[in-house]
Amino acid sequence: MAVLFQVPGLEVDIVDDQKRSLYEYEDEEDAQTPSEAEEEQRTYEMTRYIESKSGAKFGIRHSYSETFGAEYGIRLEICVDGCIARKLIVPPTDLYTDDGQHVCSFKYEHRNSKRLRRDFQFADLEVGELSDDNSPSSLHGNITAIGTISVTFYRVKNVRSQPVTSIKKNSSRYTRIERLNEKSMKGDTRSHTFT
Image (tube, rainbow, N blue to C red; front, side):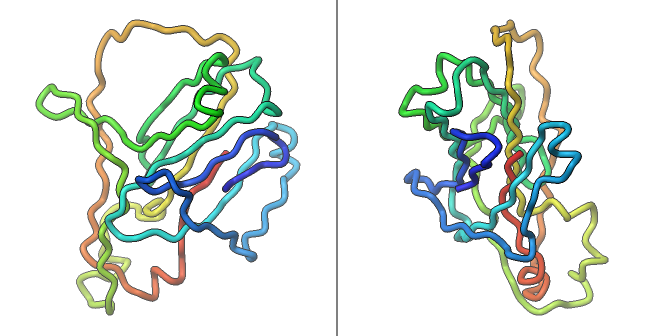
């Protein structure tokens, strides 16, 4: 569970489809201390690594306790594999509903003028020996964000509803990787970041 000591009462963890927390750990080499820039801008970041099963569905649980305070609402942005998956608003009146625990486990996609709900799901990975056709240099696009889940929180003073005037089509596309080198997977494990 990602807990920032600078923001008491806010917790984030990745859960399975039964809402059980996935096993997570810190990389001791990535020990994070707040930088002067973070302290000055009042932005904080934390990284956790999780263990998951290929193909398993997951959700992002964000929890608020009484120490968090309810004078502001929250706008959060969830990115999966470097693409914005969801943007949510939690009004101050809803922060503590359901014991303060909220789970986001899907994103919306637009296909043929229809809005479809798509569950978050870990990719089915095939890990094996590296061949010439699947070397890192042959992969197209930027794959540095693949395997990351990030959640960004903003405090919102004035939460109000606004009518939707148009529906934007989802322009982001996830990169499909057929096979990954086992060494590259072990060398750069990625998980969720919470800012």
